Image (cartoon, rainbow, N blue to C red; front, top):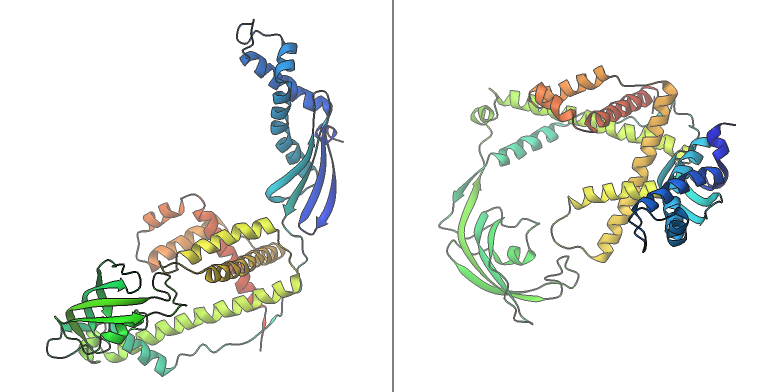
Length: 425
């Protein structure tokens, strides 16, 4: 038995596949060393009546500050003893341990219990020859034409309208002010800048824009339903005054050789060929993502992985931050918030299980990523984005970036292997 094991003894009880309870005891001799050091520190700083600062006898210091010294011994030794106990029992703890039943007084051993969570241990189910559904990677002519039409809209011009009323698709600017009919509260004047008839517009605007002309003003009341997502309007009737400043009509370019040149190509056929190639590349990537997900999920479903709650909560916070960055600025209801948290938890558990499965398969197959692999990937990223290699290299020297890219490459290699070993049906 090593000297460290003689100083710290520990019994371990398995509470669940991811929870352990440790009963830890640090020897009285080991605790006494720390007690003496801390007591000496107190004595050097103690200010007691009848003695110069730091000159009071140790027994008087212990009598006066004994309880405080014992608490400091506990604060100092519990984390250290727990660390030793975890090492002795080869337990990889995650999260913050829960410590209880701490017992210590001068001259005795230090005893406590701690509940820790651990990464789950699980056996990999068979992961080769997985049956995967073969997916169509072809791109239809209709998809090409739809994309060209989207490009056409992106290159549209908006020309001023003077002799007709607003119609759907027009770009409208102006200003609007509302007043709560019940409370009489006047709302701030807001600028208008929108496309008439767009489904994301306030329904009050889509209902009253048609028929108006540049320079005209109108007033109207609009009753919002009680379940309107914006609490500011839900269940209220608002009296609006709206002034139209300008109306512009969208004029689409003709699909001809001139349009092709605006897109950087000589002919329409060249445009169609380029669009098709880009759509096919996107389709292949989409198919690969779907097949990757199917392959990993097939392993997850059979692995029976149980996750530690603290790790799930931590991953949930990351997922929630990503979701929050994509939410509209308006407030959300309690029901929406609960639904978002439930969705974030499901995604967090999925992320963690995927990580564990990929890591375990990579270890089983002996996959690894070299520094040269990382440098090659950074070079590819720089070239595909038209950025100087030196600048991208500097970006990936930031803390954690290279390690993150290493994990991405290892996951990619592992998933590619899974797919290559699968049976297409």
